[in-house]
Image (tube, rainbow, N blue to C red; front, top):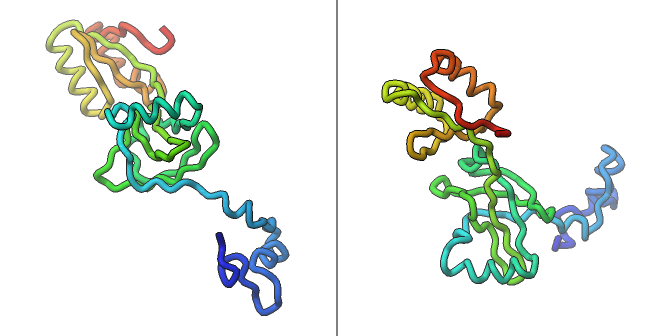
Length: 190
């Protein structure tokens, strides 16, 4: 993998290899060539999503063979474009995506004949809130928007993803909770 004339195997005028000098001067361990060839998988674009019609059968086959590795990403990290992460199988991935590309649950990072790497979104706990009336609902909506909370709605309830400690959200809701204009319907651990 490394050319004999350069790289880490290049010899210095003393006749020692660069890695040997690093070991002698700095105590850096000397790596053998097989150890040096273990590198991170570089991800510069997405293949698609696991739910895509053309990828689903291929991934299904690989899953039955135990050949899919998963990268678990926190919701707050989905917007990141450059980071390093390990799969559940121990493969290091160096991810560097274009600004226009967005990671999501099911994003396929790598697809080979005998292996795939797929993104899994880390499950977050949710705080379920209900406003007493329309005025309280407007205030709650403003508060959530002002703090950029990730929310979803069902019927009359607002679900807030707890991307930080529960107390962070409760502190900001304290006045509404004390007034009784907002109720906690369900919290983490309920």
